[in-house]
Length: 215
Image 1 (cartoon, rainbow, N blue to C red):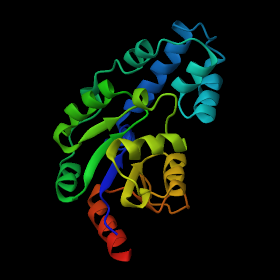
Image 2 (image 1 turned 45 degrees about the horizontal axis):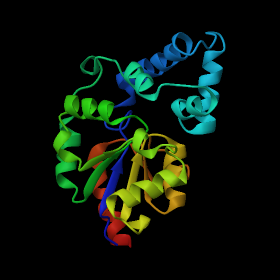
Image 3 (image 1 turned 30 degrees about the vertical axis):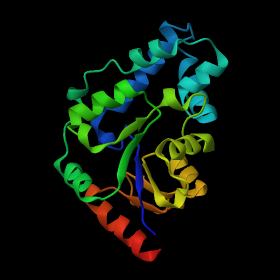
Image 4 (image 1 turned 90 degrees about the vertical axis):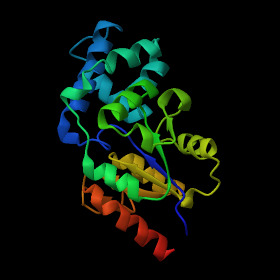
């Protein structure tokens, strides 16, 4: 079976989790909750974690539990000097050149943040489109309707022709259950949360080829 579309997560996937960027963004999410929404600082970490686990993202949880200005939230939490944390990866660029499939960003962040990240990583020309949290509203990964939206937006009708690459196990697990070929990035532990787990981008072409040849 031919794999025609690959959906790539953005944060902690197209750049390494060790970069330290995501902890900065997470801290800014907490600061927004305290400064803009008046959530007590001592309660904020628990509330942030609870919203993330229950609603898929902290933003979705805040939308459903209190009044939040979405554009203001997204601008605030992503107001980071990206070049201090991430840089281009020649291995990833070579792999993206080699893999023959349509490539899209599928992220729970917004397009502005995604475009800024892609620019710093010098990957702007590799991706056909960005499916972001604004377009997915009121859903987000790992909700099934988010995958419905992703397929519809690309014109795909068969999820088995699609690949989902993400660093979060609950997302790759949901993608696998949805019918996509699911790849968990950042670990080599095979724990059932994805069809394949890998931590080296140079392994991706072989993983794709084996899937195609096994179909």
